[in-house]
Image 1 (tube, rainbow, N blue to C red):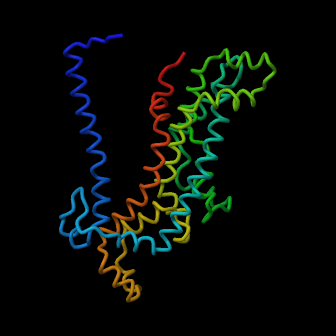
Image 2 (image 1 turned 135 degrees about the vertical axis):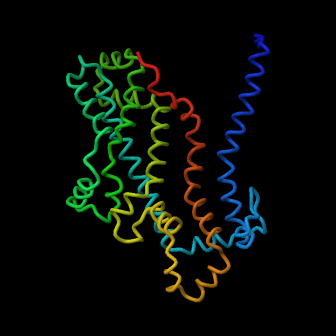
Image 3 (image 1 turned 180 degrees about the vertical axis):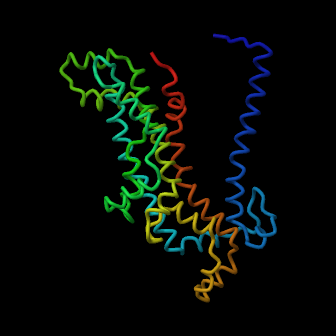
Amino acid sequence: MIVFRSKTESVFNVFNTFFLIAAALVCVAPIVNVLAVSLSESADAAAGAVKLWPVNFTLRSYQFAFEDKLLLSSYWVSIQRVVLGSLINMFLTILVAYPLSKEVREFRFRTWYAWFLFFTMLFSGGLIPWYLTIRELHLMDTIWALVLPGAVPVFNCILLLNFFRQLPKELQESAFVDGAGHWTIMWRILVPLSKPALATILLFTCVGHWNSWFDGLILMKRPEHYPLQTYLQTKVVSFDASALSHASKEELANLMAVSDRTLKAAQIFLAAFPIMCLYPFLQKYFVKGIVLGSVKE
């Protein structure tokens, strides 16, 4: 089949292609610059000579970063948080979204529960009650303090229930006729058909847990329990120069060889690297699920 395109459409496609390429380069350029700075000599980075390619290539900044025990421990805390938090979030999101995707005749109080969840998106109990609740539950300075308070992401529940509502009702009705219950229908029919939506929500969940730093700063008492982003916030954003007075001669020598800028660049790139590795595996589902909930019956 031959498809004829008008001249206007061809011009638009060319313009659109160049625009998207330019937008992608604008997004990628800062990441490439951070990587180039982290792989360059400290003198060149301090002089501003590094753009998109390393100058006098060296891995000294990464070597120094991996020698930081607190950085490695915070990396492990963030990995635990992402794994535990994502599993809990996805499980509870599915459990909440399935009944709320039903019609009122099937679930009598469906509208009331939906509005109750939506209300929590607009109003919260406040920072102090949130902190006191976690403290009274004896979750302070534990991994569960980072995972359980946000166990039910309401926004994700709304996205998923709208996706469930788009799926053909005939599938569920035929399963009921064959004797399947709600649990079987949810896990054996709806969940396998919702891979685009679940992949999109999983990506949002992983990024949210990985990038969160404020709760770790408040709820963790010891630096070795900080998640990665909290640790980087204390090191990169709020760098304390008084710590140099407690450094050994060997550490001071390393600090002289590795500038603060190249070390920060290495730490920032190490923090972003896992998410950059995760995205390609979810991309094909993310493209399909990015418009989830936009079409309703």
